[in-house]
Length: 308
Ligand code: KMH
Ligand code: ZN
Image 1 (cartoon, rainbow, N blue to C red):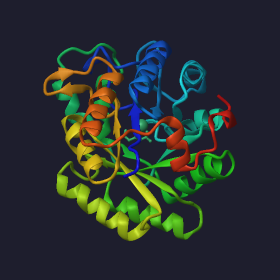
Image 2: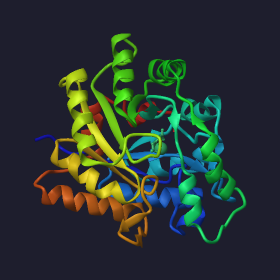
Image 3: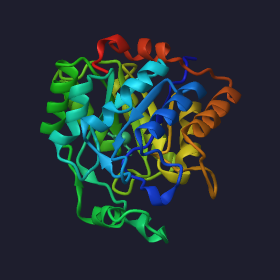
């Protein structure tokens, strides 16, 4: 059995500071969380930036460059920069930092969709910052735009021109067919690393049967030319991710996807979630991939060929 890659998504752009005091937002917090996650066993760090003044998701390359070199200096994890950013950002904004940093990996979202965060607003009693409530509530009128033209542009700008390889984010079965379309056009080369995403309101739900279905369709479309990983939102995170490990997939954890470590208990930091899934994976008799294992498995260009 091949090794399991743990990806840790450190902060994302879904959760807001009022939801957990442990959500990293400053460059120092993001750096310390990233290093902790890598030391706990994460081979890949999936990264977004925040405005350190108020924790709002940020596309500013300066905010990214305040932590990327620090992380690179202190660990050898693969740095994976989001091209999803936040649904509130333009595509040009979303691409500014990854174009600048030229990382080994980038995320690539495989379709336009609703990305409804507003139910979370109702659960917050006290807001830390003014931007949070309208940000969450406004998601009822927002499309997370990832058209075929957008996807082709990202493949060209970051893949072809800058040598990044991708975490293909598939939030529903249709996204697998869109990915196959790009393979058929010759714009995507294997081995593919597909992230099955469960539990975003607007994407496929977190029912276990959906994971077996996504895998069955991906097997049919991509044969042995792909590997999959799973992330699931909120309380579905650990069960679905464990199921991925059982079915031969990789795993993604991190505070981007869930703020909790167990029912009703906030995670102290990202490392705590990495340590938990590592324990589960090892109890299942599997071993985890090092960063260099992940580089070999996913055909990455190497940390020395980035601009970080
Ligand atoms: N936030 C996750 C549901 C991205 O950064 O490109 C998916 C994600 C998107 O990680
Ligand atoms: Zn992300």
